[in-house]
Length: 461
Image (cartoon, rainbow, N blue to C red):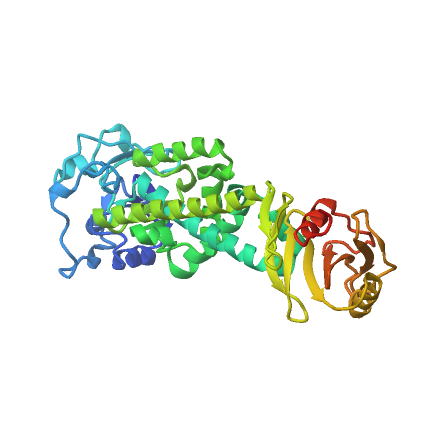
């Protein structure tokens, strides 16, 4: 025979008698929980039914004092909801209204209600007035839930973005450079569906999300199960993403979050939790809640500060920068977009590396010292030295006075390569350009950077 029990103003079921006994044994329902089956004229406390009277024994704790049975209300801090409530429920309706006329201990007023609420509907199930739904824990308030969700998204998105920025240069450098210039807020928006899946997996594996664990709150099924499986968690996370976060779309998410806030503030489920889940607070410790909120604010401040530093670094690339050649101590101006980094060459010598971040084009400035040789001899020796990895074509004079140039392709990748060389006394300077995102043969011409680098060695004025 199918049984139903009342919880938060709704009929939960159907359940078999064995399932009702299991729910009682796990204290998800109590002796005072109202139950109903076909054939009963009204909803009846579990302890008063012949089928379950044997479950009641002296080992169970007594009912709460009458003073604790009250209508739904917020605690003094305005965040945690008291779970006990009185609701006017009719089949097919989700509406639960506080009944100020309810008083604990008045058995007749709890069970009878008005005559209209006791008449059977067309489906044989009576309309009824619920007594306080038994609940071991209070409902979580809107601000606690907001900060818990913010912490979850912030931590998962930060770890995910950090992993992308670390791994992507090795997997797909070209894509990395494209991602590097994307606003972090836009990246979080794009990654929200992935964050949702990861959070669902975390909840399934650990029993809760990190943010909710900090505040000791948890989303629980309304059908009596102790927890959701991965499918249930995934569905709920996507509902939160769509109905609560507005798919992460700016402005749209304001309206969806305000709607959810008002519903929770009124003691009702958020739109994405209706008939699905209840978010309960397993602790009402104010210090814990305060520390959790401060942690969320600090986390947001740190992420914002890091993003500002990255943004300034990116903005700096849009402007020319001063650079002093460590070997000659001559200062020069590097064109906008190029980022400097000292690197070690294949022979162990120090090279001055420059990367154009938007295209991935790289340039390496190096020097060699040799006595009693001219440019023709040096360039021939340079071509032989690079021949194993980068065969070069014929040398010719560049547009910059005193500078020679030759082009080729790196083996086996086929990256286009162009070399510029110049002499100052017994020093021979070379600039090697490499385009790592192309295999089409071409001469790489970057006149502004070439001129700036040779200016730092005293060539070209």
